[in-house]
Length: 295
Image (cartoon, rainbow, N blue to C red; front, side):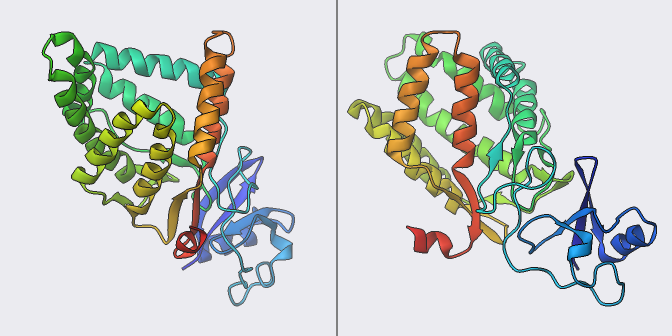
């Protein structure tokens, strides 16, 4: 059964079942000029523009097209299925600093990580998934988060092969953390039925390949692009497919600009937002099969 949303004072309300939504119409809460949306509509529309919605009787005909992108104001947005982000320069910088400090101190890592991911997801808009968020808790996989933080000190042990073992262990822990993140993504406070099905061996392989590719100076950018595509192909549980559209060249030149600008210190907050928003925008939701045709 369809679930409906409506916009009130720039904020989206819902979801509401068909019967509940018609009650809102009868009560005058949803008026002819109220913006409404349900799965299958190409974008938000005034209630009066949807045949049958205000007249009672049979459920309204849903316009053809994909789900809208929920914009920063609560409705509207891109129609191509791309994700968008509205990070603030100093908000993202401040949380990134706390996140790094939490990792370095090891024990606060689970709390710093959850706080960081909650901020990131709350500022990402996903097509058809209003109020995107993260429901993970610090004690869910505290051991993985603390071990991952502790391994940052592997190089200080003085053992020659410690960095290699640490890299493999870090890759495995990153795989555990990624599975946890995907399983705890939410919309309107409800966990999405998502899971990451990529194998641990596959993930470790990509991780090590990325590290090795740094020898080529520029090859790492293309490895990251293909690694992101592999990650997306292994996210299951959604009607639409998650894709990554960024290319190696795009990642490379933006990373170079980001690094050079950050070396000047002052531009760091704005460059961090610029890079973060661009990276998020390279993810999109498309009909299954469309990605194969695109590539």
